[in-house]
Image (cartoon, rainbow, N blue to C red):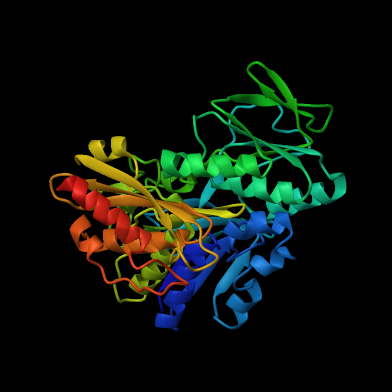
Amino acid sequence: MSDTFVVVGGDAAGMSAASKAKREDPQLNVVVFEKGEWVSYAACGMPYYVKGEVESLDDLVAVTAEEFREERDIDLRTGHEVVEVDPEAETVTVEGDGDTFEQPYDHLLVATGATAVEPPFDGLDLDGVFTIHDMDEAGAIEDYVTERAPDTAGIVGGGYVGIEMAEALSARGAEVHLYEMLPHVLQPFGDAVAEVVEDHLREQGVHLHLDTAVSGFDGDGAVERVVLEDGARPADIAIVGVGVAPNTGLAEDAGIEVGETGAIATDEFGRTNDENVYAAGDCAEARHVVTGEPDHVPLALTANRAGRAIGQTVAGDPEPVGETAGTAIVKAFDLGASRTGIVDERRAREAGFDPVSVSISAPSRAHYYPGGDELTVTLLADRESGRLLGGTVVGREGAKRIDTIAMALTAGMTVTELRNADLAYAPPFSPVWDPVLTAAKVLGGKLD
């Protein structure tokens, strides 16, 4: 009798694992339980659905539930929630279709994702107050905007969600006010990126309220105001985007260990403290490529890659889930902003490094070739070893150059090795000295 691989969660990590395991071992019995109805969807595309650039929520689905069942021979059960894991009996308890039953497993993957953080705000239950972390929420926001045509939008949080939703709601005709309790937006990207993005947001008509704490919302049934410590401002719709928290309750109740980051602790193969239980995606830790320590990086590629590796391991060919550099990119109207590795000197010192950094601005194309724009690149390195620790890129074009820096981190390169890299050159694409190479040259001189 073939083994049974049970997956809890039907999005990036879960369906990648299920698909890979079934491809590698067609005899494996693969069962996926997803408490919602959507599977394998692109959460990162939801703001662009609200904006109107993506026509339908269905367009965000990579593989439909029917395709998983009929073409990949995966026993996918939507509308089924796993409510308990019993590692000793190697069973999960499932609620679905008005029934409760137990499903045995030989291998189990916990891919329960994360949940949007809801601060202790008054008025979160008002109509028109939303988080945006799943497809149903995105659909509800789009419906609300279409039906109500809000004149004013209040966005709480200046991270990825806040920036992307500022663009989306501005495109839908709302006057956008963005509230951030810290001194800058995009805090994980560093000040050099934040200042460029903030200037651009203001140019686009977004009202920034930095160093501003929100205490809640009020209105008569529906949101009418964002309440601040020193008053209130009008808002016909409000988006709360202050981060996510890993969904670890199911695992913790089963005795699965949680790491210092608050996410499920795993080894290099995604295994938990129970050798037959794995964890991946937004609920699990990953090892950071620079520090070598566990980190919680809830990003799509991290989830897909780890899930795929676990599927291969379960099928009998062990594959490490890989390390993470926290590489990320965000669109802010006409700007792109990206980051990878450690970009904060305080964090670098906490990790035992002696950080040195530089920020340079350079043209994205040869100076004489039309269409280019200024690109700002920041690099951070360790003074003693010269090892590259991280970097950021921001500009109207070329923010994907962060991938060069990410690859350098993965290879453990020094600043000298990066500045000697043989990158492609042609006037329509870059100057002779690519901005990343220029930043490495300047940082190398500083280290020398």
